[in-house]
Length: 84
Image 1 (spheres, rainbow, N blue to C red):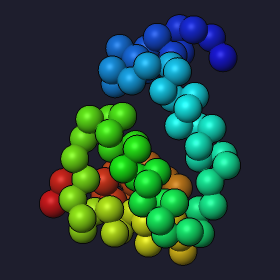
Image 2 (cartoon, helix red, strand yellow):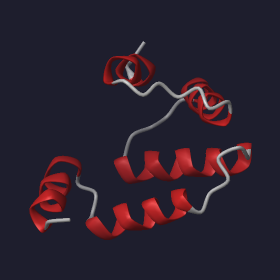
Image 3 (cartoon, rainbow, N blue to C red):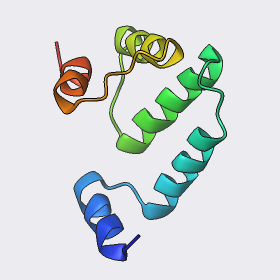
């Protein structure tokens, strides 16, 4: 991928390219049916994004991933991750 793509991501999110690759690597090797693994990934993403995730939101995300029930359209994802 072009460096411009990652430069733009870094500017908008303050997440470094290396961290994105590390996260992608950990996700690609992860058992997404294992609750402990999914919780660790959620915590890792929250830390990278410097965004707190409430226990309630973490539970929603974990259950959606484990049950293969993650919405794939932007509108549904926005609702899931939006503030209540």
